[in-house]
Length: 520
Image 1 (cartoon, rainbow, N blue to C red):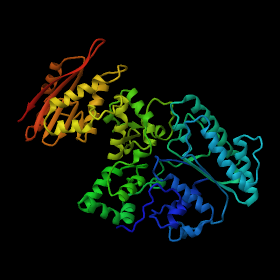
Image 2: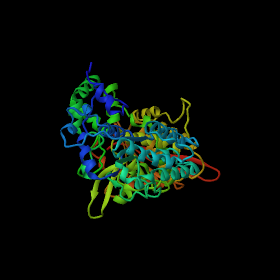
Image 3: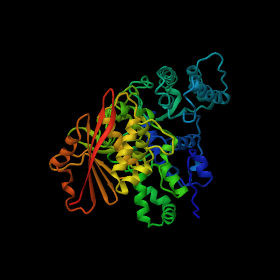
């Protein structure tokens, strides 16, 4: 039994240190942050260590040096003078209710008013915040540290409610507008969130806000690189390998595949998601855990509405400006997918000045596809539903392409009638195959063209060509004319050529298909 204590879901620095949980030291970032400037913003995906970072900063500003014994900050030239800290955490509140944001701010301000002896009377939330900052300074003689965690959650949670969204936007803008005017009373302000919204302008008055989200110096400030993983969790990985009945390197490879791959600067490290790693080591099971804490439904809807083919999300290009400043009203979901952690930097194309993005790992890719499929196909809870992925998987592995296509035809019959087109049918077919746990690749190049979809299930290879309101003959002819199967001439696996034509008009909807078994 491991002696390691894994701080799964824990975000309080003092509790982790005092109770002997594993802590990956990030305190060497404290001095650079203080030297960086007074007002700092950083975006990182949820469940990536932002809250723990802020809690660590809170302990520092409170002068609790005993907590930092043996850590990097303890040996650095830092001022450990205690000072007042105002910590606003937007993580836990339900912002879908009409006055959720107002109730949260009121409660937080009341707590600080009890400490700094100010009566709210008939003042607005914004005025009360301003008074507290000044009062804290006057009472202690020290400038105030302000820590704001997940500032954008009151907006992301209600993206579909335009009226409430605009109300919360105005409230946040008014509330945080105090920061610039109270500059002389503030020592340091650190604001974190998933995204920095250019069109929300919550911090438009704070023109000296320094965004470090893509800076090389802070690339590894949240998340764990592989060196940190191995130096702190080798014993846990060894125990996980034993549970999986495989060697250490194979288990580490599986963890890379599932949880590694985030990159926030070209000079930074590839990073593991801390939350998922801790869950895997504690449960001794490598599974997707990140999506348990939230679902990107509005992003999935945008992918669907723009007719984007899901696998094409890998390879999307963005400028730096697009990556660091987005608006919820932007129709392009790609920049926000980067900021929310569903896409990450793959490489930078210097000549074009463009960042190439991709899914960071298997956990995120499969999780996002799982959230995307219900946007196309209404959820069916019947255990005999054709959407049972185990049935599709068995069809493919057990050489039953006819059954696979019949099941697929039933799914298409259940699709909503609005806004269906070839991209919808192609996307659903791809999502079903990949979520069935079968390796699936799209648009593979042959010397004459690109196939729509190729699926690899055990001893079987399935090559698909899709048409929409055309003909089966055309679909099958294209497979032969462009020699999609030619690359497998030396392959001993069974190859199935499948031409599919989606029929849709006012009187009829259906899927016709032709299957031909081929062995060289």
